[in-house]
Image 1 (spheres, rainbow, N blue to C red):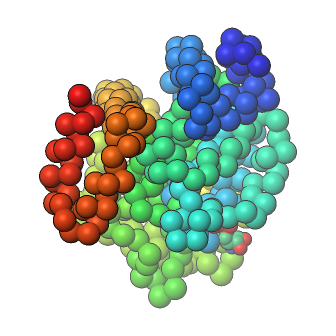
Image 2: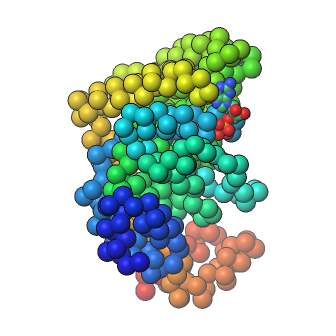
Length: 323
Ligand code: GDP
């Protein structure tokens, strides 16, 4: 398929074209990269009038179950969700942390929804770039609510929080009612905290957890641009609280739009994206430079063996690169 057929196909909301275009984005081949950039550029005017949500939480907190319920809820209400995942392969196991289990089965069967697993491999920077571009393509294809799921590995939350309008932290009613598994850094990125599994035996614990998180957020002085970080409870299995969660999302977005922080945040994100691209592009140009490719191994081993300071090697290599 040519660039223009793919572009037209995406705009017409054809899933096959959307999948193929995202595959181009994920490819590391230079010719694919050029085609992908053309597609993204052509589609850019058709993006942006959407809600971009990030969701994070430790494995087992209920992310995929909640995204499935929430996604079905959105479909019922006339929306067309797209779900993307940011899951840089674990550096230790090489495997995907979000897992290979069948996820979001009902949602994935509905033609109005679009689910794309994480691009595999590569640096977080590379994964983040591909996810941002995939998000734009989904928007151009008519998806109006984009959910980007991530799991707490390294900096992936920060990367996702930097590409969405609202970042939702999912927490489960914890054993012992401690605020467990929560690194302060992640709580500080959250625009909303969602306590999952608020059903059956866990309903009381979920309410207590919500109160504890509210208090904790106040204690650390965490207020969002509009003054507060809501804490909601919900159950993916019973459906309780899903509407309140969506209402919280739309209210926060309406508030942010009315005071101008919505556009400011997107503007900041676009600028940060540009700088990420500059970094990625320069590093890749550097690595692909024939003179660098010839000498890099020598400098690496000099540095490795302690015979040259890293800073000196950098000066010399950058000198070679600039020549
Ligand atoms: P993920 O690893 O964060 O994607 O979590 P999953 O969605 O796979 O859920 C982990 C476990 O929690 C599964 O055994 C689910 O059945 C269970 N679970 C998920 N959502 C709920 C819920 O709303 N209520 C209850 N009681 N259990 C849930």
